[in-house]
Length: 354
Image 1 (tube, rainbow, N blue to C red):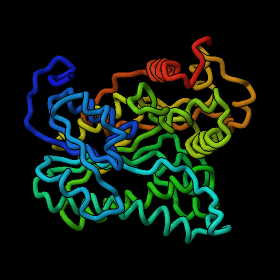
Image 2 (tube, rainbow, N blue to C red):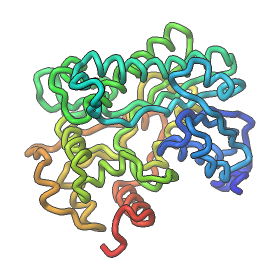
Image 3 (cartoon, one colour):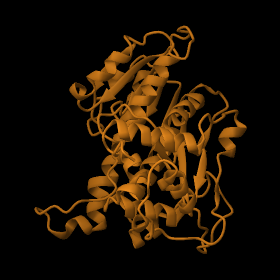
Image 4 (tube, rainbow, N blue to C red):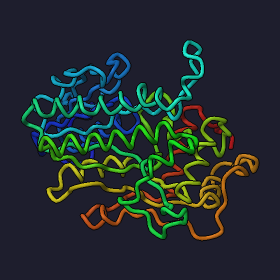
């Protein structure tokens, strides 16, 4: 049992943090990272019976059942916690047809009422529990690069993409690119969270996550990894989403799971942190990404043909604000690709023979 600091440090702090979405890719690794640093952790999950394996990490971990759509269901988990990492969110990239409602799933009103509004409501429910607790000093909100764009209002590439480069929601509603439902859900949820936090005196900091990859603790391969590796697998649902990301950002931004979790904790602990922070190790052009993957695993040429090509250098997706605060990334793109492929081979998602 990993009860002392897994990084060689003794348990140094009596603080306890709550992690929502504890059974997910980022959530589960964030739990592990916090425990290694000596913190107590309250993790919320919808189905505790599916997360019992996490209890093997430490006696300082407690699991709580909570549902984003049930106001008050996070009260017990957040009570007495010093801070909250709100990671929980749907990873649905689209809306599937429902035979009971005919074509309504295509209507904006259906998406608004059944996807976007519930997502925002869930985050507000978490923040309401933070207010009741009185002990919460800061909330770290896990945002997404889906809320960003590398194109300016005229459709031209920006040389640098930072925290100010928000995607115009009206454009997403109008064009409905692959993954549009997820993008709008993240945009409106973050806006609702920031507005509620400002109105109620909650110290909320957002961390903008790009494509997260690397090893994972989840029993299945995380969606972000399956999307990244759709260049290899040719996944008919996820490869178009990767293409849409590339079209919007001019490249694919990457971060290692350990770096994104370390950055979450860094922002929780740093008194000077405020606002939004991009957390990207490096952004790769599609050709660069294919080259990196091909060093360890063959990428079928046909799977890369649909990716939009750009003659110019892709815009830099900048983490300058985070670096200027003092954060340093540990893992390179090569590390990210290697650790991802190794983990997927171990899980049988990719063949060991390659």
